Image (cartoon, rainbow, N blue to C red; front, side, top):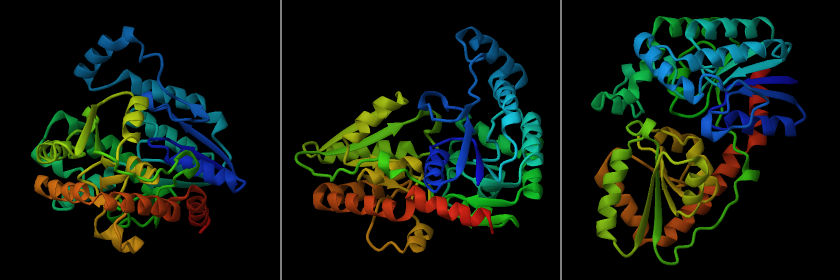
Length: 376
């Protein structure tokens, strides 16, 4: 089959492409390179012109006056130029309801062009979208990244509610009425997505294990704990709970732990430091593991991330493959203390983490599941 993948946020589509091409399919990936992360794509619509330093101040002025970013327009224009190459595919899959990340009106226009010129069209529920945010706001006790916005209504969460604007709701409704299927990628999105008639399946994230080397964890001296902070998602990930817990852990075990904390550093620096760690603090408001957590688990790290009952029941988990993180400092301190005092358990969880990712997330196996879902 000829398959077009639109959008890339976390290497999901790159890993899926790897699995599909291994199975003999022709796959084209169009996306932006996502800034410093530099995700590989076949057709790159990354904004370059309006990201030049000379436009920094004009961009800020225009955004303050009109709530409009010139960069988003450039995304759309660059994507538009690729349209002649984005036709006659057997399957097209959008990574999100806002895959192009241009203005809402322009986004809908581009989506309609893709639908008109291709066969089956699918949408992933991956990252925040209208259906997920609506579900979160209607179920405030449901563990989700929406919960911290209730207690901390900071500017960090302003973009959440762009999905409730009239322009985006039109996109959502068009997709629900004209797409062939909807696929949820983890349990943070499944409960919301399955309420829609076009819901097709839940398919876990594909992981390219050939790029992630497993290294058995050995605690020779100190337990090394890593926390990588991104200032743009500080409250969403529950970083404040991790910071408070780690401060208490350092006081409790001054000779047994080494805590490494970074704040919005370049990706290569982040990876170099996280590779040294035994334990990775990922996020406290998730139900399932995202890409960052799964890659760390594949390397054999003990990851504090989402592992709620829906996750453990679905995969029939009996022995922990990660630690279910919660926005509760005392709980986090208790879990960290247990691992520090029982370093053999760190080694054991790391081994189980790798085995779990191999069993449930291998990109070729996951690609087969996508192919089955697309042709139902």
